[in-house]
Image 1 (cartoon, rainbow, N blue to C red):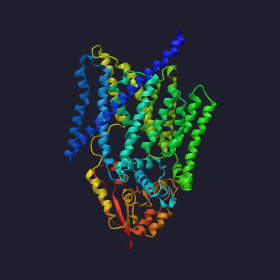
Image 2 (image 1 turned 60 degrees about the vertical axis):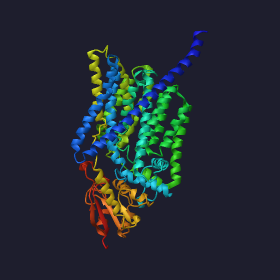
Image 3 (image 1 turned 180 degrees about the vertical axis):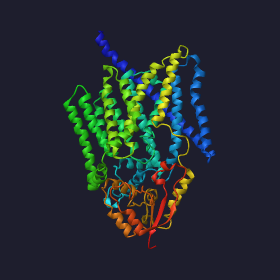
Image 4 (image 1 turned 90 degrees about the vertical axis):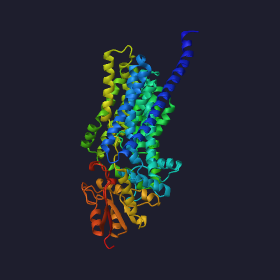
Length: 611
């Protein structure tokens, strides 16, 4: 048998074995990572118990939790040293220490997020009220987009709301706001899995399919935990456990990036069909996801040799055509109302370059991570196939950063920051395997110094990425229950459809009432001067509502008539002329005034002046 014949017969067998080893390593690391997340959940329960035992003494509770965390941080590497002694490896020791720290950070996040997840009212952020209202509309068979004078529609497409409701229905909790939030956290878990698979693929593409350190159980713990923390970071992903389209949108975007890596690695043409579906299906989760059609076409034109005009044309037709079809389906269902709410309202917000630059200064660590990772991973012609996916990330996060200038929030940059984390962990794994490739028996002082420097730098980075949350209650749980109970009491003596609550749809959900004149809808359009408020002004003048509950009625930050609007909506004036305030519901306590969500603020109770 000639050498060429041997190669043809032996190489497929070798590749099959190599892929099996890689798949086994991936599964091993992934299981280890998710066992670590379960351990974090157990630690979070312990943190909750400590805080409950020292209610009213937050400083003391945090000190005790700090002592617990200090002990838990050194237990895994300590046990490893006891068991392996001089045979212990420096890389495993470092991974165990970083893994222990990351598990504790996840536990802090679980503890922090649990207070919001368990809240039975959809009042934490502006989008929750509209999110639940869309679920209510879907249950009732009511149109999701209606005339703007009703002030009852959402500016996002309904995919995330409908999918969330479907899972809640399967769980037997179709009317539970906490269940809806738990499902958002489930999307973040799935996002972590796809991010982990992307990380593995990048490592295989740059260091070989059986990179020893990434096949280790010890590597799975910090990689999964850190990716989960980035997917839920407080800077660009603060809504991952709340009712917003962000959690499911991030899952779609990281999946789009993973498909690029899979196609680049395997050149399997069947993956192109999945890639073509991302913008078309993603459109129903968030309108901006159609950008993937353009990113994919540019990638195929520039980074996919041998270039094929036929392939690019076919893919472009499928991806852009699918996106257009999605839009036409929406238009057929809701006509001009669909266009107004999902395009006109959002498109009327001008991008402020100064605000975009400010956001760049806020999220700069993620930009730097991705840039450094690119330079580390792409070190030779052999690794030049990473250039295409890396360029897609750079284009994506740049577009996200620029368009974030339409508002003051940075949550739209979250997916780009997560991909930066994927790139960085892949590059860090490559560097760490070189820096700590030694056993204790043969390790020099310089190697110990290098290990300590790597670990310290990595852990210090956690705070700059928004991965650290203080293990203390974000607000008073008892006072939150009091606040919600008092709101519900205001509905006890009136028909719910004649009591207007500015923010929050949970109270209407149980009665199946689609309520008009919601504050988030009006606030969104008042700023951009795209709203017709004749409907609510007419209902106020007619005194249609027997009772109105509004937050910040005496403040400039009043979502019905904000002080920063170029033109007043006249709603505050009309309320003062036709209604009078009879009492107030105190704001939720336990939070700094600057951290208090709008939905937790003081509420004014108004009734018609002739009553």
